[in-house]
Image 1 (tube, helix red, strand yellow):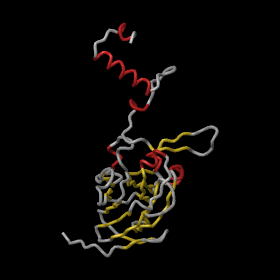
Image 2 (cartoon, one colour; image 1 turned 90 degrees about the vertical axis):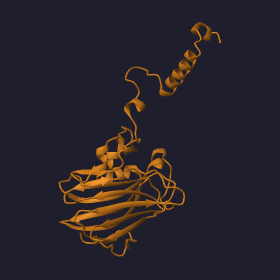
Image 3 (cartoon, helix red, strand yellow; image 1 turned 180 degrees about the vertical axis):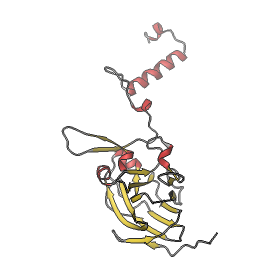
Image 4 (cartoon, one colour; image 1 turned 30 degrees about the horizontal axis):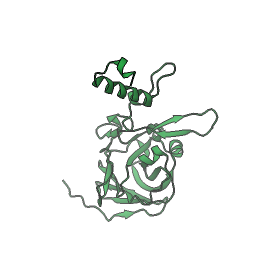
Length: 253
């Protein structure tokens, strides 16, 4: 096997700056960050036939298939969700790519999960983030994720496929969920959307990681007991019966 030597790392510092690269079956996309924040690396794409998709943490929808596969389409594999780095260290999330033959364009994005769920105003300036791309031909490219603009979604860079000629482009676009939902092909896969008949603007919220129907949906019927009250009743009854106190005595206390 021929030895592969990495070329000198090239940092795309300017927005819209592009750099060509080549690969023949192994491409690594890595997110690095040093803050104590739960950042998620996602890759969304538009196929040549116009359909869209993505690979991202399987905790959003509870589907292992969302991590992707290297043996079948999308020929991309997300290596899993890492929460936050140990103090003084960098954390990383990685996506491996075996083929981009069917892909027209892919978008490498970061999501600040907790801030998006809580609706907090944040920037990525202090996260110490960057995205690196390494190919099996030795190409080594980097885009910093240090914008001071506010938003929960950071579209760091994109990969263009022009008939087998590949290029990485510095996008550096920070946006809210609604903008990402509308403008990034495939981003809707990790969103819940609701249409309000009064408001014209689409309201979008991220799916809660590892959520389940049992935990989040109320029973169908008239006037269901609210979840918080139901839980208190269950705890109270459990404590009552554990003491084996007759109900008629408990009612007097």
